[in-house]
Length: 484
Ligand SMILES: Cc1cc2nc3c(=O)[nH]c(=O)nc-3n(C[C@H](O)[C@H](O)[C@H](O)COP(=O)(O)O)c2cc1C
Image (cartoon, rainbow, N blue to C red):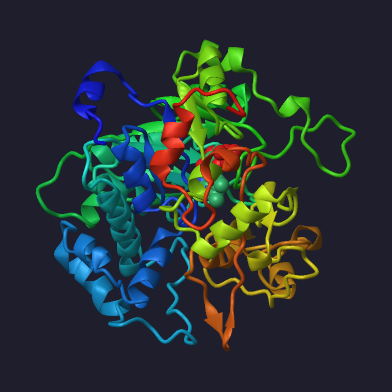
């Protein structure tokens, strides 16, 4: 089915009621987003770690040639050609050999490193936009700041329609989108730990340094901030650097990272409570369109969201388990089977993520996540979740609570923060089959899912064949009562 999006575009500002949530890394890939957009809904690719993903896809041989084909469409051919020359391996690297790593993102990134970010984001959006005239968004995490500006530029070169961002309060982003759309230099304020001198650090990016041709304007994508409360939504409106076009209001049952619980003073250990439920009346009163996320994968939830004033819903987990997503098929199958026989456990881990945010973890054999079972020598070699800290004398350092403890402590990190940390960068790369191999040992996957898996009984009637993204959408739009 091909939806008539030209009609939709003319009739409404945001002509979709379902957003397929951005899921890093590489879970909401271009194929998934494309399928969703073909159904007239908003397909969202993940821009997180997409540079590493692209160079690994090239190192495993780009079997069907799709990435080289997309690279050949990049408007500055030399940039894309350099990447192919540096990373493509005909026939793929030997399975027991490690992937070639990129330098970790930092403020001193050289030109080639920035080009990789630009090109990789372009490629993912370019591919997602093929074969339909629907809408494609890209998702980033506010906590990951250094790659953001070149990434936005790359996505905009491919004509991305929406930028969605959560995992923090992305105040600088709307203004950066305005600037990039006019091909002007932009600046992203950086969060820096222990910044005792109160110095304002920022990342500056000038698109004209990378694109010297005749290009003075790019489409300004719409910006949707992912928020957990009316307070954050209002802050975005009051203090955001430009237009916020709407909100995704995400609850703590959602897959991926969750906003930290709001403290009531007595909770120990950490847990979510009534204070962590957004006040939708107040969000509605802001007057911007919004979509609800977290446990919304049912036709009833879609209707209910609308009855509360939302435009619709954002759904992640149901799409993460669909055939098109980047998650390895054997992991999807195990999750579905375990869910059907009642043995799947999804927990909120308040320690695992180096970001310090709660993170949902599913316990499956492919991804033994319990700390006792998950033996891994700590190593930080992708570095997306490194935090910036102030070293004094105007200098910045980088550290990750998931790196070797000694190293982290030597950079002034506190011991408490290292407890229970997992390497999400490497673990999530393994979940999409792009795991690193070191001395013959492969990284284990980490799988994140939302709390609500009730959709599985409706969608995964055959655990071997699974289900397509199109079926998720038909189900969400079916408005059948549960159990029918
Ligand atoms: C596998 C997975 C990865 C996710 N990664 C991200 C991410 O990188 N950025 C983000 O903003 N949200 C992320 N999310 C959240 C989804 O975009 C979506 O908001 C959420 O899954 C909705 O709740 P649900 O899982 O109950 O459908 C992720 C969710 C899943 C299941």
